[in-house]
Length: 144
Image (cartoon, rainbow, N blue to C red):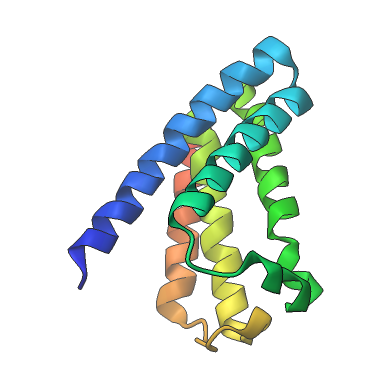
């Protein structure tokens, strides 16, 4: 197992929690859609600079990829919007446990059916048990 990748992914998870908190506060101050837009704008400018300095690919090839592969930005914008909208209302932990449960269930369905060109990995009893535990965690973390 590559520990550098695991540590990087872990830090990415920490960044998501911090980002949700920051964006939730931003949305309360300037508006939900405005906060999501500003967050994406700053992220876009940051990635542009990083791409110009370190990029090794060819962005001009974007016109040759299947058009559905370009929808990730729309989905990312929707995700940021939902964070800005929901964190001030139900809190970071409730939002992120909901996101994690949804990500694991949806990604398992994508794997199971081999959607979007990924390797097909069937859902088995252990995964279903994991989903039940995820939903139990969601219930207990969001219960008032």
